[in-house]
Length: 201
Ligand SMILES: Cc1cn([C@H]2C[C@H](O)[C@@H](COP(=O)(O)OP(=O)(O)OP(=O)(O)O)O2)c(=O)[nH]c1=O
Image 1 (cartoon, rainbow, N blue to C red):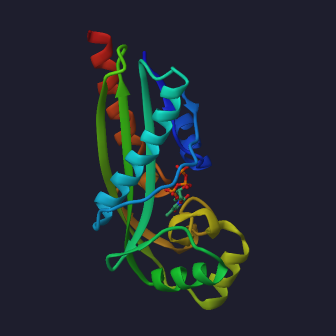
Image 2: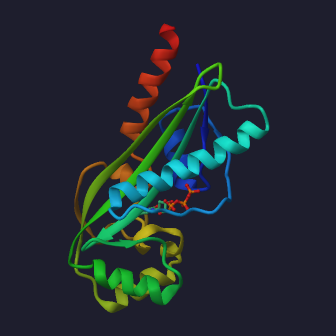
């Protein structure tokens, strides 16, 4: 079995990987993240790939990259083709939450899996997964109280479906875990394909 490295500082991604019983290590890279694409699916794929590549290059420097799978991910909220990342401050969170209420938006998570064999030769799997989320109408007091809870600040779109925002989620279409930050089923199935290929060699 290849070693699995999760290149993410997100506690949610770690919890989701642990939840499905995967054994993995976490390595975080703090290199800059930039993108050139213009459509959300491509942007999250690009950012996920960059995160995984940053971690892989650090592991390479340490000489521990062979026989390893490195995973990176990136999540954005998209409303009317506008990307909402993490809010800059509480006022920004308020604007984002005002714009999301009473309607649907998309959440895209990009995943990059870098599969290194025993010689250090790499295969790349890079995918974006979409979930549609319908948010109920909220009044200003509810938005203000939610911001006071502190939950929005480290989350794309200024909300966490898994926390105190739950009362405002009318329905979703697609993978719930994709909204939390990692499309667990996609990741698991892809890992299985990679590990089985390995076993067959
Ligand atoms: C929409 C939504 C996002 N989020 C989180 C998932 C991600 O952690 C975060 C989006 O930020 P990201 O930039 O995707 O990830 P991150 O900075 O937290 O971690 P890293 O780059 O090291 O992997 O928003 C939720 O937890 N719940 C939600 O409902």
